[in-house]
Length: 226
Image (tube, rainbow, N blue to C red; front, side, top):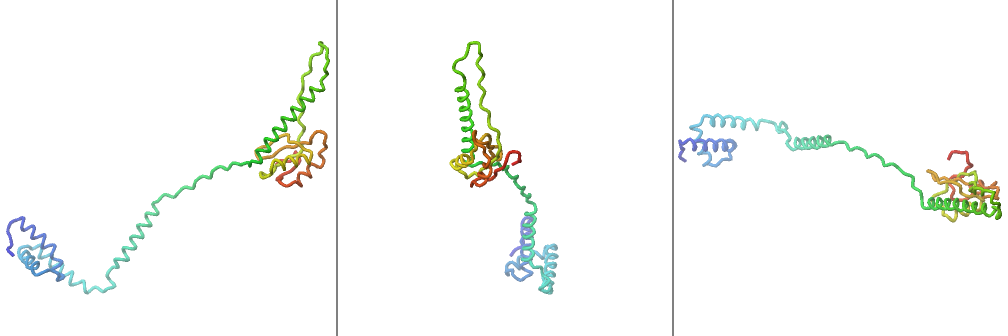
């Protein structure tokens, strides 16, 4: 192989020699590659010094005990584990969601009882108005001014009851009729109703009868906080 003296050829020959030096040192280069590098080494002091350095390093490598060489696979595994650990530490800590406010939910039976209580109150008021109108004298003097009709007074509540949400309207009406009671108020925020004796009844044993009735969560006399 003829060695060119042109600058661009010399640069190309220098780069090629630098790439082939490791293969020449470990004995893997071909005869043609060895001849090309030898021709370049005769003209390049830098490549000569590099060749000597690589030969010293190559000669010293077999002298190193096998245990002294680093375990590349183990080192790579430790590096990957550290990267994964750092990535997990960099993640923001999730914030716990605030618990949703709990609202008391009334069952269908509760709304049905409330509607029945309202209807019962309206019916009692209408009955009271009708009775007052019937008792009014049919003949009066023109000088007598008509007296204002006073609405029937609502009976005073004596018992507080909290029925179970699963109680049916029929069972509720039967319990009230059996105890001689009527609804005069409720339900409040906890589903409690206030009861009073039906006019004409004493209601002495109403408390015991309601407590013995299935489907009653709370039965107490008025004056006790539910």
